Length: 295
Image 1 (tube, rainbow, N blue to C red):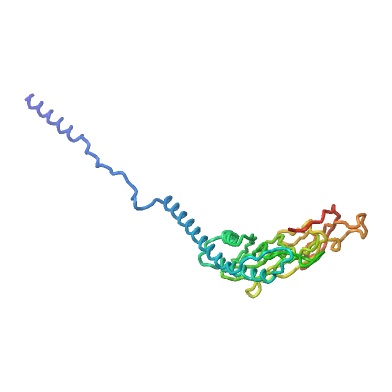
Image 2: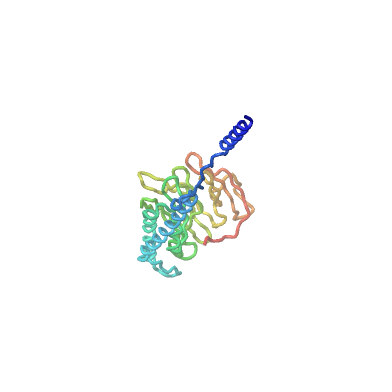
């Protein structure tokens, strides 16, 4: 009886040991990215590289096209006493259409204005100043688009050297005129306001303040104020919105005595836009600068 009980106990222990052994867990295969599908960071890097390459190709093609377009308009010689005004006129007539084609070319629509300006500068060797608007139009100054030889001796004015125009990305080109220089320009909501040196003569200069606005789909410039200075320096200054102007011109002074200790004083005057006109509001005598000419 005892022996049978012992065998029953051994059998129970064996069964218990077998049921307590855990089942083997299935093998886990590590997750591995598909080598044929790039990761997000790799895709972004690849996209940036492609964009840069596309921009470089577009810039190179545009540069080649611009050089070809301008080959029919070689830059004339600018020497004192050289009477080649017709050549300079033809040269200027070639610049503005070429700039318009560059801005409207489908290959450059993804390029910034700064990039297009750089392409034009590289092709021509000229400097450009560009002021963008809140639309797709750009006010562009082509520096030294003309030879600025003097038209005569003494105080005769020099020929205007810089070309001012408006271009857009649809092929529109509007000539605003030629000036000695554009001192400052800014976008004022729906138009540009620009302070320009209209002409240099002797040691002095004539200045104009422009509004460049759109009317019936056309961009036009309107002279809002003009004045002269007996010395080209100090240069007049305009506020960013064009509502205030500081200039140096004795005839335009206000609130000053009629006689001065200095027979030729330099007078600084502040003007403000009031009721649509620029009015002198204050003047003061400042140290007289040495007369100089603009380059």
